Image (cartoon, rainbow, N blue to C red):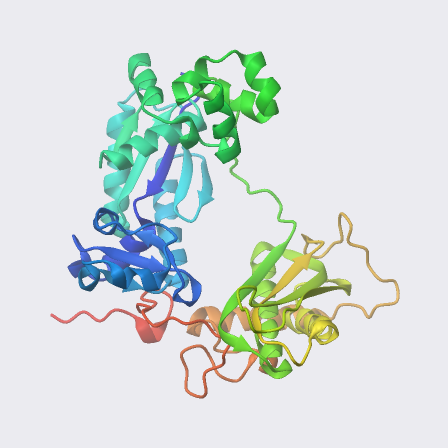
Length: 434
């Protein structure tokens, strides 16, 4: 067998992260909310059984008869991100190549393990991930990435650790027949509607449809999906992520923001977050876009949506330079008589740090980059990594740290139900009493 892919997927990941540090949540319905506690973005199996829907507004949860039994948590992305890193580090011990697909999914290269049962090996990986991190993981194994997605879906649905579709052709056909065409990775809603209108209802139907017919109606992408369902790999493992073209930091506000000072603090904080992302990725930005929006659902407030883009003199990831440019752009589009509900900073024209590339063009007359600026940012990031994000920051982003003393700013998120950041903040480490 030349190619074998495994798709490892953390079960109900955000809810599982909460359970790792609070075992009393096992067997209880758990939901996690989006930014500003707006809507449901994760559910435990018990919450799904109670009828909690993905994307459901948080206020509707109170209408459920079992409302008091549901444990509700605000999104705790520092914790989730760190737990994801731990799971991925564990998976790397069991395969020579790994593609991190999302915060809770990764493709594994399982080629060359033919001397053992792939199902047993997959179950062993799942057991080790649970033992080392506390996170339950399911693995789907197949000859292609698309089939591995289907195998993983079955593993999660049947509460099994690993499902291996390479074991027999009969097993693969049964899995394809049980998978609706709309649940096939890469088909999409419109593609599914088109296929169903032509009688292609399941993944098995798509895998046996004439290749020329599929390509004519779904282009090369659809033809590749059809081949993958037939066991012909068309998608390689991407061990190195593609170069990022943009970096976005944005947020809807808990309450409307009306003053330039408050909105400037938010934009400065977003600019700092974007600059930090660039430094972690070894990239520099050539230009900055700032956008602001009022609440489109308000029937009384006047509307204003606008954006401005400014070029940086030289590609940079220095927080001060990006923040200064972002605030200049904000002042060009701000209107004093508006109530803003959302703002964001988009960093564009990204290129590897230290050299220009693509559409990034340097300025012959710009001041030379001061090497001390790079050392300053390195020290900046090291301090925040050691003592917690926001320990040191530019005053333009506000003097009140998230969760610290002082007047709460309107632009900061609502997180009324956030659990402690157990693994990323010294002040919130779990305490064990014996």
